[in-house]
Length: 359
Image (cartoon, rainbow, N blue to C red):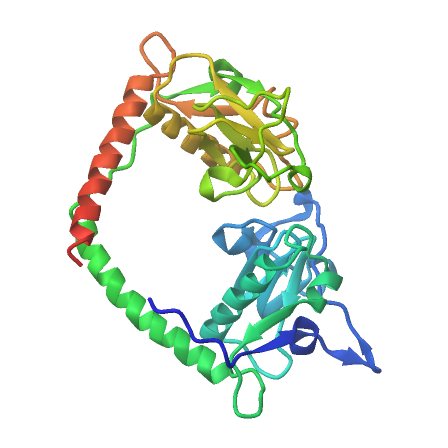
């Protein structure tokens, strides 16, 4: 997919594109508010949190339009203070520290909304405020956009570009579907699986709790693992710290909170960790494939039963965090089954990738 030529694009301040004025005064970016989980009733309106997955949706609730605490908006872009950005097509309720952006002079549609999401993500990644996007900070940021002959944002271009991308992607997806027919995945029967406390399988170490901004990177040799869901959680390489031994390769790292709560990775090289990242040191000789199986189970449990900033892992990880795993007749984790299952997935994926190379 070719890169877009952006040399004619212009920078626009968020406050000029999305924020209305009242009596000559700029208004702040609309932001959500906290509502106790006990007050939320099941319904049809999605509630948007700082999560980086599932369009930021925590769940669907009955949001009374007359109750301003729900902070419901429609057809907008949500931006959390952690920098997670999504297009919300219908009505949605905003949780605490999630902002609402609606263009001043146009109505969004799915194509222009997704284009702007990409552009805003780009400007946030180049911003020094990527970890604390307050409503004030967000308003002052600039986003680079295509312009029309009057140097206004060219929403027609945005829509046409995304429609063309949709056509191309749909064609590729059709080919991908054909390739995936070569691999058949079945649901696992987990009726015989048993619950295991995390401390049954790992020594749970609190990590080195280092501050990324204070790390020396003049001679980078050691991986630095933070709260991230990409690149195995590695956010940069740093200097070796005299007197502080890195953790060994083969340990797992687990993010305890934030937007990437539950992100769990096997570290293949020595590493340090940031705050709120624990290190899981296996008590037994567990294969890499079995660790992959367990890491997936940890992530699923974290996403299903915990919530960023409301019920995080910190208070539970060493006490009552439990995952379900296949077990042997003796009641111990069946690492051989886990390794065999992951190996099967790898072989099926390799077969599928082989078919994709013909596309």
